[in-house]
Image 1 (tube, helix red, strand yellow):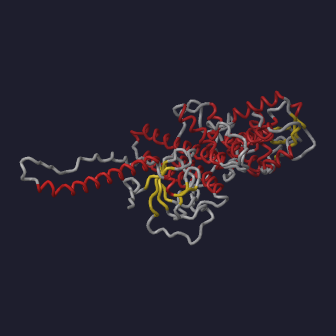
Image 2 (cartoon, rainbow, N blue to C red):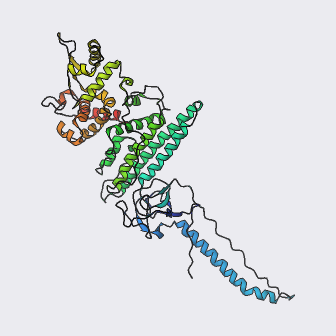
Image 3 (cartoon, rainbow, N blue to C red):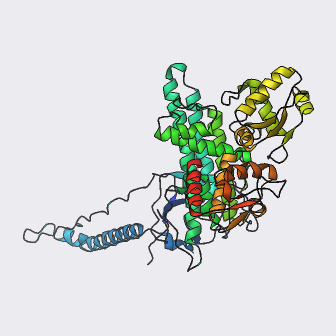
Length: 524
């Protein structure tokens, strides 16, 4: 005789599963059926690592593959044994009761013999708890398998395809719902609306950070034996530079999929989350340095479309991580942004405010930054400047140029015969105006350069450093100029090049300390 006991199911009909990999926290997950109408491909897709439908299961947290029976929870096995024990006892009692049932009727009229037949009660097993507290319900877009997990998972338990992009996409959907709810509130509930938007914004970064951390730790766990042990992760993935350093261990940059503008938006929003989460939304000095439209002590503005764009930029990075897990095969879904991604500072020039510069001086500074071809000591022809601003008089142009010179954005040499001086730009102009004019930020790029420089010894040559970044000259030079401004001038190798601000430099220990602290201040 064989007895078959069905596995316990959730109210939705999913089967409870438990990974045999003890390191695959939290090990618990549930599996449902393949969704109705989903047609499996004739052959495995490039993203699949396992033939779907075979009697094996893939651990969604670690990718470990084992027979289905190995994924049965020990508590479920114990419960099944109790059910079998109860059934066996009930059957035996019923059989014995049947043996004595006729005998009891035979002696029913006897006054001296009394036989009472009937089974003793058998205690039923304690009912099994039905688990329904799922954190995330997913449907694999490669094989159509319905499943649920209790934490961030990496793989479909049926076909093994990376599904981290689905996990984060669900987070984006919830953020959309939060933004929609906030927008539906009236003006008399503006404080509540701001709180809802703040929660939505923080949820994006929390999910983003957790996703990067999960993928990194998975890669660490599957490294060959003898590889260096992973250092404590901590909050490394709340910072773009430190996150890049972590993934550099595997020769991978998770942010390489982003344009400079998208990276600038991501950087600003990471800093904004710090202000909202730890400073009650009031801009501090660190945030004011990143966002020109925020002033120290003022409440940081939150706009629903910007939060959604932040989420969708995060989705771009997660899609890249997903493709990396799938050996270069991208996920089969498109996650487009609600609007074109622009740098956080890009806006109409009339709205840009830089120090005490007047509007015309700001426009000239932006024009110089946009027209520059290599971002270093550009000569500014007088006739081109006049042609670029036909509505301004010579006196107005001269005053604006003097403003830029006073604030050390350009260098000027006056001539008696000319109304306008000879003009050349300097590094300060690009460091300040590039975030508005081009969307890139030398203050972000310089941190990458510092990290690269601190890993070197001896003299650092500019051409070698430039080649390592892979950046265009126009992007490299402002960040490089910012870098060498932090080094003792005697150790900077000036002259000998028309392409760069310097040929290179060498560092002593004091310079290294100063650069390290400088980069720490500049990180978001």
